[in-house]
Length: 107
Ligand code: HEC
Image (cartoon, rainbow, N blue to C red):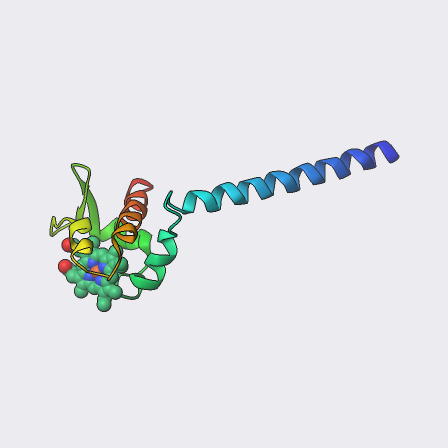
């Protein structure tokens, strides 16, 4: 019995390590290189008016020749945000635009 028990214990430990590594990788991917957490910025500063990010990006935005733009207005979203819409600083604008792009590309 001791052999199988040991193998099972080892397996459980390995799975736990794998799970921890996956969780870390996932949270690293959610952050931009600048360390800004765009998802929570969107959640706290944009979602109140625009709703969940995936729905907003999916129904109101598009990629127009690599430009993140209003789906129907054609307006340059990054320029709009830089002009002060949503009151983000330039780093946050870049991070939130990258985040919204990813939402469109994930569709
Ligand atoms: C107080 C409410 C409010 C907040 C907060 C807000 N917005 Fe807006 N946003 C609007 C309104 C209203 C419009 C104009 C809708 C339109 O053009 O049809 C708009 C337009 C936009 C557009 C252009 C859409 C288009 O079709 O041209 C983008 C992109 C956008 N918002 C992104 C954001 C982001 C990102 C944030 C968070 C940093 C944010 N907004 C915060 C209300 C808000």
